[in-house]
Amino acid sequence: MSEQLTIGELAERTGIAASALRYWEELGLLPAPARVSGRRRYPPTAVGLVAVVVALQNVGFTLREVKAFLASRPPPGDARREMYRRKLTELDQRIAQAQAARTAIAHGLACPHEDISECPNFTTGAAALLAGSSLQEAHDAAHDAADDEAHPH
Image 1: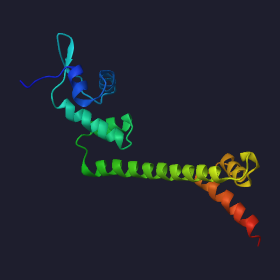
Image 2 (image 1 turned 120 degrees about the vertical axis):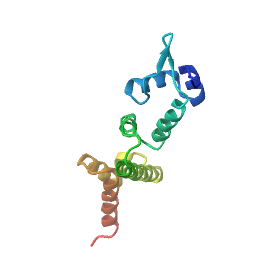
Image 3 (image 1 turned 90 degrees about the vertical axis):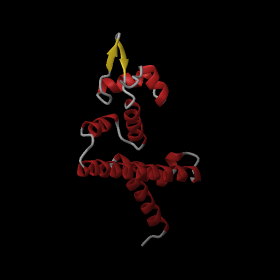
Image 4 (image 1 turned 30 degrees about the vertical axis):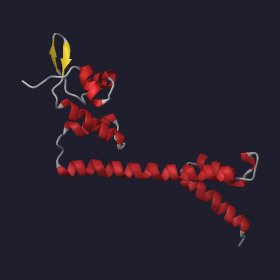
């Protein structure tokens, strides 16, 4: 029989807190381990499974998504690719939102108005946000309005 790991040993080998490992077990990300004298005993393969969970989390998958991924492990090629496509689309949206936020902050830094509420770009953008626009759409609306003021037709 191969060496079994206690939860403390698994935590030490993976760098994941024992409390997190117990939580992952509750969620079904880790299979319930064998118990010896009431103590959890994980197979050495649990280290690899923890690595998969950590890797998927680090690229943006939620624990719910990780669970779905692991539930169909190994997922058929098409299912796996679809999960990756959905996550790429989500990440692209988050990147676009972060870039729009960065642009807005950079504009705020360069804004000559001491009171941001006096800045026409800010007020136009804020109104667009309240109307349901995305941050990028609000930014575009603010700059379209500024361009119209600078260059009347």
